[in-house]
Length: 252
Image 1 (cartoon, one colour):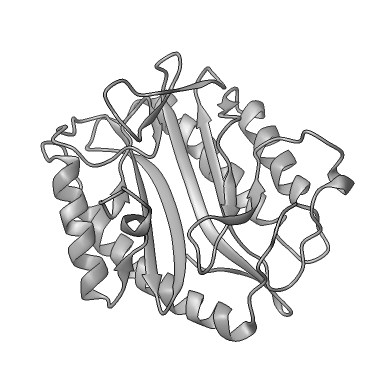
Image 2: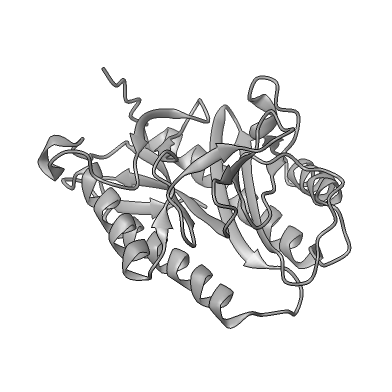
């Protein structure tokens, strides 16, 4: 039985404030990322920026997770903690980050090529994921079903020739970083049997996919990191979005 916590307009307003702060963090952080630096340094920069703009780290509030970011590289899909790993020219880095403000969480992720080594196939791979998220966000509206989001994500990714990572999902968000409902990337029932969206619903919609496999594995030696089972390239794109009486608002 899912327990969905709908938000009031005032609560959504606070989440918009948090989203505005997170946008500033991202705008300042991404230009600092370059080959030759470690993901631990990126995390330190992210923490400093979150504090600068008056927020707190969402992710460090997760039990036993002490970092402000998850920073997967290449075959690492999600939940990868910062480390001494040094970024190389041409690596695909995902920056997954959340900001907590006045009792509410926001969540955002993007993937991009580090440095100047722009492989055409990798560029295309990332463009497909960005477009899938854009089209999925277009389904987030009152009266639609969650399954319409799932349908679009899988359709766009597979149309591009890639595979969703089936066991990884988006989620509700608010006072808790992860709330009901889960937002799968595929349909396992008729669309009409999935949750019907309405004002007050706030979701973190995620597109998490791979070049050639839909299967994942825990990364050896890590308590958190998840990788593609076949070692192929992965990426993640995510926005926090709210449904209001006046329509959807992309918070991040």
